[in-house]
Structures are given as structure tokens and as C-alpha cells.
Image 1: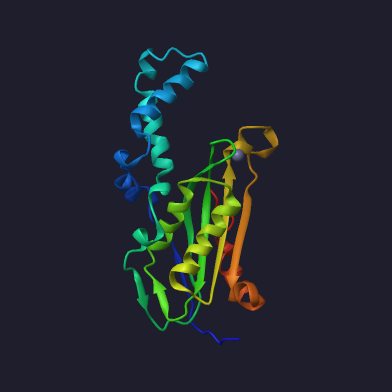
Image 2: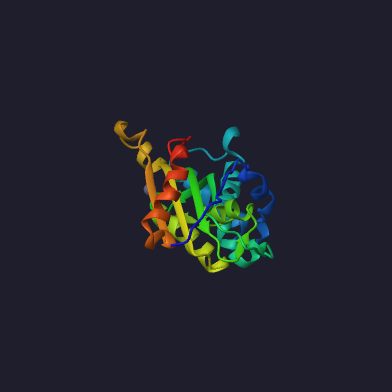
Length: 221
Ligand code: ZN
């Protein structure tokens, strides 16, 4: 087992929406904004609405833009996102970016689930630009997802990108599809985790990670 003395814990207070607005590009959406708008107009008509009434005139287009925004992760890739932000560095100790806010859409109901994500890794001669971790979370979150797969995809992408000694990801989320149905479930949250490499093999390393993210785990909005 490696002896480690230093550790890095960073709170991620980035507003993850700021750069995502910039990334939104209607032209790159297959099918296009117009077709998606027309489909939302059909949905409005189908639920019995008057699509011409004042409040709804621009709703199909706004809904289409919102859907494109929430699924923009399909039009991003890990290499494009990481660019050259991988650095050779003899860092030794767990790096954790915690409290990364995320918003995703459940693939079963197309309803949002959202919460906080904590990402840790144990470097092996390579580190990643810290701001890239929330972006990685966002890229996978902005697709249709189930929380379990989202957690694994983030861990696997980080593992593939910098081949660290281990990766650990914990996500805590509230699911609208649970919250809007049934009075008992508004305050429940769902926890998922994925541990790879040293975090999986070595109970002490795993415990260190979970101890470090523990204080933040109840900080779900
Ligand atoms: Zn759902």
C-alpha cells in the first residue's frame, strides 16, 4: 500500500450553466430546432391546449431549445472536452472535486434528476485540469440517463483519460419522477457510487475517499 501524506480537497462552486449556455448550438442538433418545435406544438395540442394563446405562442420553440440544451452532451466528446488539459505531474495523494452540481434527465420519464457529484482520483504521474471534472460530469449528465450509468460513465471516462491508480465517484440526486408522484417521496434522495482501481482494491483508500466527501453528502439542494 502506498503511503500518502498530502491530499487535495476542492469545493466546486462553479456555475456549471455558464459555459454550457455558450456551448449550446442549435445548428449542430440533428433534426434541428424547427422540427423539435413542431413536435412540442403537437404535444401541446394533444394535451388539450390552445397553441395560439398568448402565453404559449413561443413555448414550442423555448421547449425545443431547453431540450437541446439538456441533451447537448450527445454532441460533445471526451477528447474534445479535455483538450490538452492533461499534465505530467508527480502528484501523490487523493484529489477530490466535490459538490459538483449536476442536472440530468431520466431516460424513463424525461423528467429531471439533479444533485451533487463528488469525484476523486489517485494520480499516477498524470493529473487533469480541475475545471475539466465538472465539465466531464456535465457532458454525461446532459444526455438521457439513469443515475447508475451516469456515475459509471464519469468514472470510466476519467480512468481512460489519465489512467490514474483509481477513481471514485459518488452521486446524490433527487428524481422528479419520484418527487411528483406520491407524497412520501419528496425528500428522498438516491445515492450511487462507482469505485475503480485502488479505491476498489484497497479498503483504506476507499474509506479515505468516503470520509473526505462525507460532510458534503447531505448538502443536496
Ligand atoms: Zn424517471
